[in-house]
Length: 432
Image (tube, rainbow, N blue to C red):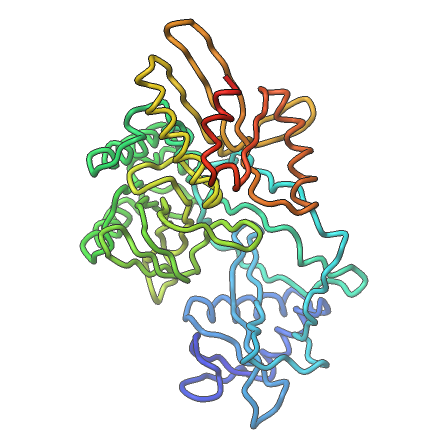
């Protein structure tokens, strides 16, 4: 077993050997047969490999073969280091007798869940990073089912961005600022995002407004300014809270771990950028992106560590959307809103980012629309739900959530074909 630089195949180049004794400590702890001494030495090995940006090359296949690779990682939510197997068609699997060998997780029908992933308000401080806990995960008990393939959880970074968008009312069409089509309109939206951080704590006595950077560029000067702010306030953070900061910017492209901002600057994130998908299909840009900055490792220092890219209506219109179809519907709502405004009618809509509780359970409507006719005094509230697919599973899931939505307001639906045929205005007029 040896330590090799990350992003290599482990067969050549610089490396350092892991002694047989240290290897045994790691294996014994991983197999849940070790004691606390094994744990201490094993977690130190994994921790040091992570901070030095090294992978662990396993020797289970012997010489003459490319080694299977393990990536040291830290799961902040669980406060645990773990070894992530690096597998693809070009990388070898561990030997079947190797302690680190794992079959691919089988597909289980009981794990299939067509319910929409819950969007709940994040708890605790507005923070992601925590001081690392020196604990190393072990292999699952053979007596327990391998349940690693589950519905993907909503990233906390996404929830933090939604919290800001919700507080700044960027998910609503009520404000004229949110229908901007120029730079000044976008600048006003960024300012609103910044200001809502005044009363949001990242740690006791540490407020977000002092560590939130908006409308950043990707140049070295912009990043150095963020690092300088972090360094100058590092000693102010209370014990048990890791110094960190956030940046928000609009982006025109996301690929892997590279973010392309509207101005063309590129920002390389240390981890792959997360963006939502619908049935495996990514939504097209533009995006509003939140970036986490902090201490990546003693060797690397401060860096952009993680990022979440939320699709929005436009480059100067930050109403969030979940799909390209939903963006088209939102743009049609915008057009219809402008048309009705000339007839003394106000039509506004909001895109809920968190679940709404009803007596029948949680739901999250696509759009909640309000209609006010100043001449007649007529007021209406209804829900517009987009029907993006026609599979049995999708329609079954939608029917259950629509029943819950009806406890909030009447529900009207629009399909892709109806939207493409220009039928949305007629649907809206029937709703009011």
